[in-house]
Image (cartoon, rainbow, N blue to C red):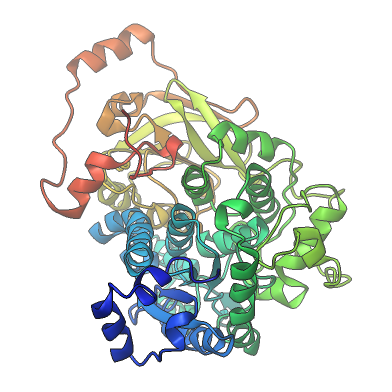
Length: 559
């Protein structure tokens, strides 16, 4: 029975009002006997990542209807990370993930839909949609809106991070105002998510490896016939898994999560993936921790020369074979479990067997035997600054050890001003605190300060640590997600200017070289700052959010 949920309202004679309302939207008597598929779009006009998603949803609906199903479009929210970055609005970015999950769960449960297709773009859309799918556990497929085309200026490829770094170059006097404006005008040529292996492309790629989207979903560009064709084929795919009764928790298992994380390691993906996959695993009821993340990173090579640390964009990767070709390479080298089931109803290895390998002589993905780095770029660090863990992005280009005096800022704006005004010097460890899940609140991303550091030419000469997050576009010697956060009295709150900090990615440690007695003394003098919000959605977030090492989830309560 494919309509096991919708029949509650469509076939029960005691639900006449429901049936009358469904006739009012244009459904026939025959339609009421069909399975109902919700099509959840995060489309909105204010962001290139999402501006085309409502149009893609219409292609998807046509495909669903032609497969003899009822397709019903509804919308969830989105926040543009690129637009809100460096502003108070960035506090709402991570909370939007959970609002998306909540809204999708709410609509599908309330409206009794039998299946679900989510249409997503910017960073938090994908984990939010997937968390909603896993909570519901009804046949579901995720469709990513696709990557943006590169911008061009003076023969150089540009993307959104180019704009942030251009600001750093401008304030440090390296480029003129006119040059700066040219970069801004040309960085983002149209629809699609940020072009490098930033959070959106990282999460889309990982979800394809996870098995929750169709092959090529993550690498098909936003503006392409391939993306339209993919949307036009989705009806058959959702009908197939309705018939097979394959549900998200059948697909998202410990093994498939490990597949996803290995791909992230190979691609050099975003540090945000740690936070999101911890939350996804919890929604899937899979036992997966930051320590599991570290184990995978230790046994997986980093192979992809993709931005932000490398040269190439997702569109470039698509031209040489896309994500399926990378997965095929990994399968060939025993880096994947090919037996994991996917939304095709077939195993991962079955999906890949007839697809092409990477194009010969391509230079984006290095051979497994000649990696950029022998181990994954994301490292979980622990020490007296982060007893509950921290996340570092170490590609090998920054070095593996950094030791220097602290330069402390109690918010991002102060740090941005400090970098702009030359207060940050070579050799320092920049500390940005009180920007965690509760202290931010919302754990805002720190792309603006890291881009400013790069633009000012300090990228190889300073480190940055924070209880906030980094953008997928961040590169350099950076450590985020520090637990416990400053707002909760973690030792990051006790650091003072010129304290010696040592970050060691060989030993996976982050240590504050201050005597224990002195730290106790400082802790006794410390008092918790008041929360920055006393009402509204961010107060609700503060009250419910877990720490970063538990995925910043908001839907679990301790007894």
